[in-house]
Image (tube, rainbow, N blue to C red; front, side, top):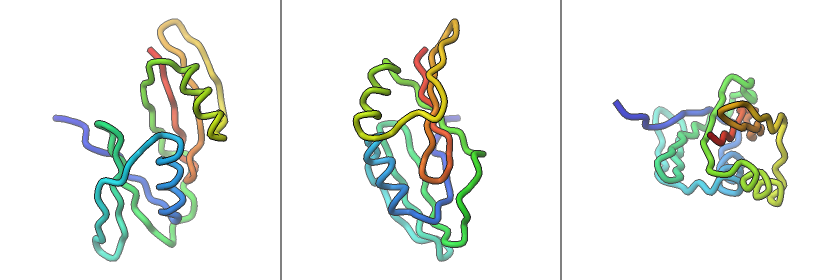
Length: 115
């Protein structure tokens, strides 16, 4: 079995797309309409997110937690800061890894980790 994608509802599809393009270099892969919902798949390398537009959706809680491994946490934090994205927690250093947390446009938590 292989991982395929993470799906996330949003009431602001354009804003969510712009966030992931600007800060994490995602590109549009496929847009579909299914059962009256606009769905947009975005991708960066092997990572794929499914953005599901739901106009009735209130901003979700912090239930969704996405974590991506990066080669240099410090370099990634500097890059994101230059683009205007600041951590909501961290960075934290542990014996086997370092980590930092950001918040996305739908209140999702985005963790970056260096192992």
